[in-house]
Image (cartoon, rainbow, N blue to C red; front, side):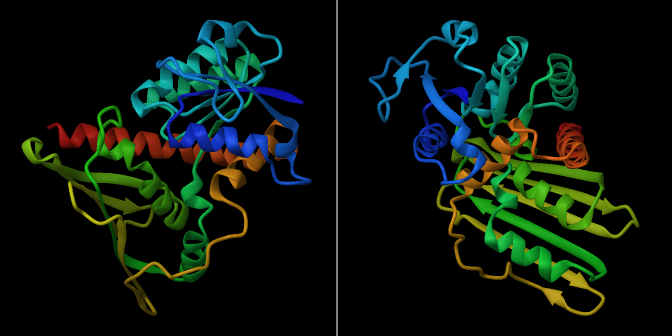
Length: 289
């Protein structure tokens, strides 16, 4: 069994506790036992789980795993703290706000002999799986992914990082990408922002990623993928999966802890995550010029 602490009790942290208390029967997630949670606020017990300090969690021998569910800007500090203590870490995306820090954390995890896992539930959705099946075998000529959503809360970071789930979609669908240009429109008074990034596939075919946030904007992914044989203008609808997204991610992380994920798959995942973080950093730098 692996004893776990959940750091941050927002929506994600609450769901992590819930899923560990009632894991999918017969899955590797049954090996996780939630021992405690950490919050900056003084709270009563959550779902029967007690609050502890970070110092206590780091030193406790019955806690071997940390789930980092804080604001994005605090991820790096918390991941580093628990890796240094020799704990396995599962962190909500993005693990850091720059590529260099992420590379340092991967190296630290390797040095300590522990698992570092970055959550990407957007790859586990049924609509993404259906989209991937639609795209497979087709040759993209050019494409656009335009995401809209409500205003970003403080602590979520630059849109290329807070929206890295969309960038991860594009990399997972079309392979390694590079950034050629990026711009940022902002109206701070109205809490509005629009980031536009021009990307190239490895064969120089163009992709555009737009991340638009502001009050009242619908939560939507609008696509226009022009292939040699057809054009896709909407994400294919798909029924919701039988197993929740966070539970699927919990099972995947638990399988890593149990040594059930091949070194090849672990390496491919690490390469993709670092590639996306490097792209996000490049986009941010271009927007600031």
